[in-house]
Structures are given as C-alpha cells and as structure tokens.
Length: 153
Image 1 (cartoon, rainbow, N blue to C red):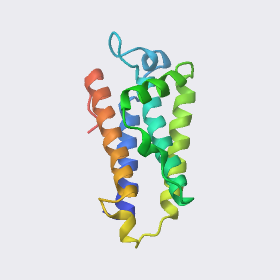
Image 2: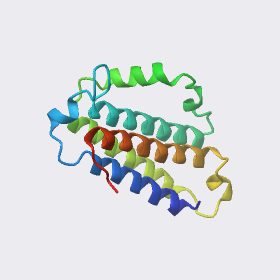
Image 3: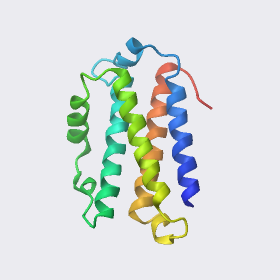
Image 4: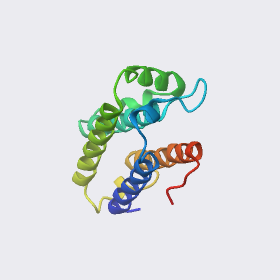
C-alpha cells in the first residue's frame, strides 16, 4: 500500500463509522447497546483512545523512543480504564476527541515521505498501526450497524 492508500482507507473507514451513527440523538448514542455493554458513545471513545495511543506512539518513535503502545499486552483492562476516563464526557466531547486524534494522525502521516518503502511495508510498525486503525473502525462500524439494523454500504 502507498501513503495515499492508507490515507484513503483511514478516511473511508472513519466516514463509514460516522455514517453509522448519523441521525442518532445524544440519548441514543449514550444508551448501552445491551445490558452490561458499551454505548455507541463508549465505542467512539474507545476508537478515539486507541487512535490517540497510535498518535502518541508515532511521536515517540519520531523522538527515538520506544512506542509505549507496545507495552499494552492485555487489552481488556486498558480498554476498561480508557472507557472509565471518558464516562462523564458528553457525546460532543467524545466526537471532538475522535476528530482531534484523526487530524493529528493525518498530519503525522502527511509528514512521512511517500517513497520510503520501510514506512509503508506491511510488516513495519507504521503500516501495522494504520492497518489496525482501519480494521478497528470497520469492526466497530459493523457492530453499530448490526445493532441499528442498517448498513453504510
């Protein structure tokens, strides 16, 4: 994949996720999907948290540091902590975090050289992280669509 392929993929997957919640009220977004399950707001916060962690990892790597995202081995406790941090945020605040993290991510990607094959090699850190974010959006978009009985196409 090329740099532009990653940018296009990230934008397409995020667009689908946002289409999946189109027309929902803050109340709808804040309601748990089932007993003991996350709400759509929690899911969006979860996406924002992981994207923020990837942005942090890219910045750490650029500074010659080891990305701390590689220290996350057990996802469930990490997800629970991050979800709890966002529990009292409004849907608008969650959307803002999601948008800000995406803007930061795209800004970092734009700064990467197009022709550096090491960056875009699927086996390398950058490509793996960007691929994970695309898959993550697609996974949660599908779950939201399944819950709503819709499809974003």
